[in-house]
Image 1 (cartoon, rainbow, N blue to C red):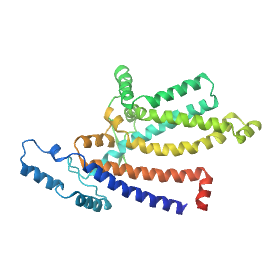
Image 2 (image 1 turned 135 degrees about the vertical axis):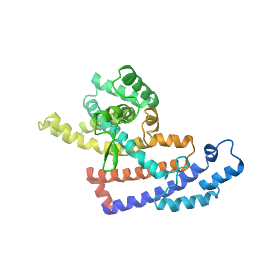
Image 3 (image 1 turned 45 degrees about the vertical axis):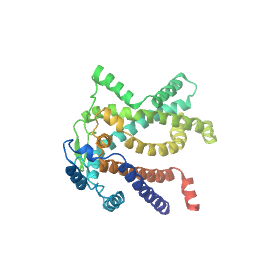
Length: 325
């Protein structure tokens, strides 16, 4: 297991190094942030002074060397707009985004898994066909439109849930969270549901396919022949096997929930990293954009490592293969 983790860490280091090069040069060839920050009345001398202050007067390779030397020490540059360390801005918004992604992932599991298992055990029933039809809508409907409809129905027409914001937050171990109060749950319900719809549909289809396949296995037939209760067959024999691909996919999908929450955070004015990224793109705040992408890359690498370890725990054959390798 130790050799397995070390090998994955080595691969992760190469991935992060490659992404640093791609992201830095990719962001720095787009537009000129100086003209987004200065007043139109400023003369050429003031423009040049602004470039010097931001470090944009140096050649691109020199800027890259400076960036890498700072990144090794945890410094990803200072925001052009806010004047604060970019990594500090990202990390200050990360709890809100992580909170939203975790609740969305929880919704995907709690809603999608039972529906998928039911559809797999009863593939010909009308309820199962309705579940699969709804899952198609989850894949097809655009996130921004669904978010607007949720606001229109639950906030404007019914007045049950707030449309925007995060509500009151509580600081626990230095991290702000809104999940320790009923008001916080009312604020997060709509954006989390909007973010989770695609993942719910994905879990439904994965669970249905896995359940139908596992239900035909010999060990399940033998369990039924022994007279075991249906709940035990599903809970012990079927669920244990379908959870392997679901855990693998959801681990990767959690990273996508964090990385691609921009639309949901913008619609619901959720103060997370995605909303900050959109503001940075609009203002060409390069350090914030680069810091955001690098944080997401590291997050994906960590999640991949955790999924690999968890996969090897759930499936002993993975450990056996690694030992032989």
